[in-house]
Image 1 (cartoon, helix red, strand yellow):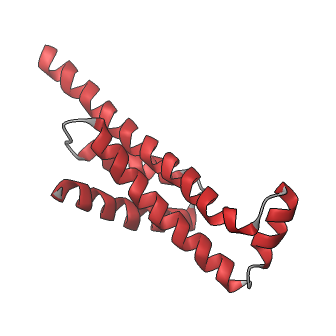
Image 2 (tube, rainbow, N blue to C red):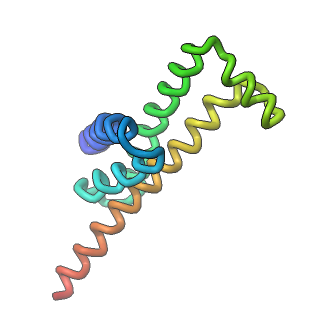
Amino acid sequence: MKKFGLQTLIILVLGSIAQYFFPFWSIAVVAAIVGFFFKHENSAASFAAGTAAVTLLWSSYAIFLNSMNANQLADQIGVLFKVGSGYLVPAVSLIGGLLGGFGAQTGTLLRKIFEKEEAAA
């Protein structure tokens, strides 16, 4: 549990810094790098940490942006996609969470590949 919280916090902090300078997909790279350095027994724990961190990061940023423009942008995007404006934040959170989760899981599985190669040699 301690590793989970620490991994989530590190992805959250480094991801928020990376999102300021790089495109949206850089969060997956950050989650993969962080996931590489945490030794979880299964990759599901790393997936959960990445999902939690990026869901929190993207949902809070979406809520912040939505409140800054008095919900006008969400209303216009809702009209564009023919859905209610209330679906914007959950959709952004879901997409970001999956992106972060799969990124962290990729890093963990990559580390396990290197560990198996070292054990075989």
